[in-house]
Image 1 (cartoon, protein in one colour):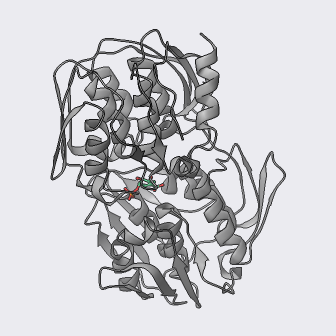
Image 2: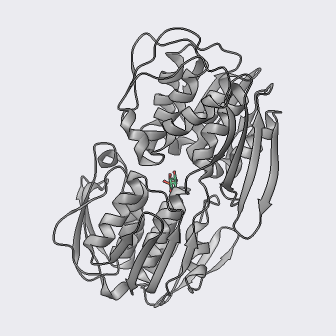
Amino acid sequence: MKLKINSQGLKGHLKVPGDKSISHRSIMFGSIAKGKTIIHDILRGEDVLSTIEAFRALGVEIEDDGQVITVHGQGISKLKEPEKALDMGNSGTSTRLLSGILAGLPFETTLFGDDSLSKRPMDRVATPLQMMGAEIVGQTDKVKLPMTIKGSAHLKAIDYVLPVASAQVKSAVIFAALQAEGLTKVVEKEKTRSHTEEMLVQFGGEIKVSDKTSLVPGGQKLMGQEVTVPGDISSAAFWLVAGLVVENSELILENVGINETRTGILEVIQAMGSQLEILEQDEVAKAATLKVKASQLKGTEISGDLIPRLIDELPIIALLATQGEGKTIIRDAAELKVKETDRIAVVADALNSMGANIEPTDDGMIIQGGTKLHAPENAINTLGDHRIGMMVAIAALLVENGEIELERAEAIQTSYPSFFDDLEKLSENL
Ligand code: S3P
């Protein structure tokens, strides 16, 4: 598709769509709990639809009346062997979290995905789940999709130190631990998003979390709940950055989820010296209304335990850094290489083709600020990565002349189906 360029400013209010991580988990917890789960404001992006379809194939009745989603949970032991292999689409979260659930179910399930998901490492979930007693076989010894999981009705609890900072792997082990005999201990390298732990408690389960260690007793039974999904800060991130870098912009973003394990981008924006106001904050719903306007920015350093708190925002933060004064350094972010694309290489290539000066490194990027962006000579391809697509669409707003063709733009449906409608809306308010 041809992207909109040369924005004269973005203005107005926006309620950002539902959080992807919480949407997946609301379906999963609802499906393994007993009783009805009613979900408000779920994200109807393709990734979440993959999760919904997978649980339907496992025998769970899930209704969508266009307003709320109702999951008729019958308890985890009532999930049944699917008739055919499950298509996980582009979704790493669906695949890895579901693996933890399947690990304890005494039947065989094969999972497959699209070209991007088929390249992503699954050994990180296979290893702990095999230690617990599940049989998992994938393509190659690194375990890639298609992968077949034969669960065990007698999973054993483990003590496991996660070798990578990954909420997906932590969550897979927690889901398996709920079905195991004994107490499972999971220790993280860095604190990652805490939605699984929090929602487990919301669904009546038990977990003891202290700093980076979680203790999960086995043999748990959960009960259906009513869940309201807050807006996704990872989707809001595109508008936060657009509001800061597109001249003459002023945006109010409503219902932005502010779980503290996800708010690294707000700290980066503040460290870059720009204008960000929290207008309202709902402590119970963990959501806030944020306001940004076009501001002067300066470079910063992003590393260490901040990385898991903004891992999905790094592509759009890279764009933000190209517009600051001075250098921004991102390090400790090698995980970017195993996202929907190698986001170190793909972000650097896309923005450099538009005139940015980004040096990719082994675990991040060095970004020179103050660069003026222009239309690239060739089309830019998302390579199936939604966040690359949205980052390029925001970068295009800064380009004054020419045309920008975005190939495989449909990847944006993964997490933000109404992205271009929202861009239109914010462009019209001038
Ligand atoms: C997610 C965890 C993160 C994140 C992904 C969603 C989750 O992945 O990048 O978009 O919902 O648990 P990793 O666990 O691979 O870091």
